[in-house]
Image (tube, rainbow, N blue to C red):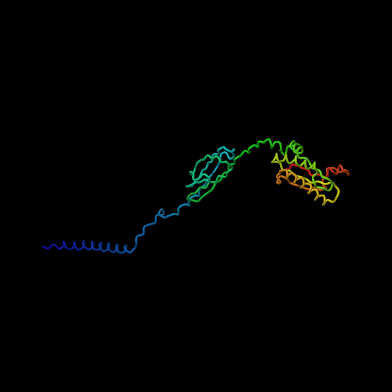
Length: 265
């Protein structure tokens, strides 16, 4: 007897397998038409770097004022700096101290540089320089123009010269007085003098101004001839504007006709 049931079940079991295979290929074709895109990770998005901070600097000195010969400590602190320099000192550490002894008041200037730029700082140190006392020499003490006694000594050795009426020629006693005055002035070369020419009140103001100048120049010429340097002598004419005596007598007029010597202060 023929087994008719063995071939029929094989046909039915084969058909589902082929259909499944065909379905798998169809799905692969459909899904292959679309590109797979991975989702974006927010952490992978690049952000610009923050700006480089600018350098800062503080600069101090202790103490701020010293006497000549003393020392001062400079102190500086910086941030964000890669190099620091101080004028007069040169390159220094970005933070540090330096002991200096300036000989005069000084403005210390610091420059700090970094990737973020540059900055500056200043500090001033005042140096008190003592004034050397002046030790007067014997000559300076004898001729100090601010001392009343020196005026007295001066006039004892440099006396006024008197003139005749309407004349500017030195009389014999005037020449002797000029010679004595020149000896004193040559011995004291630091003294500078003013010679004032005076007249009595007779005649015009213009005439007496010219006459007074001639009298002062006559006295100056006598001193220069005796060895006094001319650049130590200054002349001025007062004419009849300044009177030593106001009486209308010959004795009074004689007092007004003179070349007067004074210290040139």
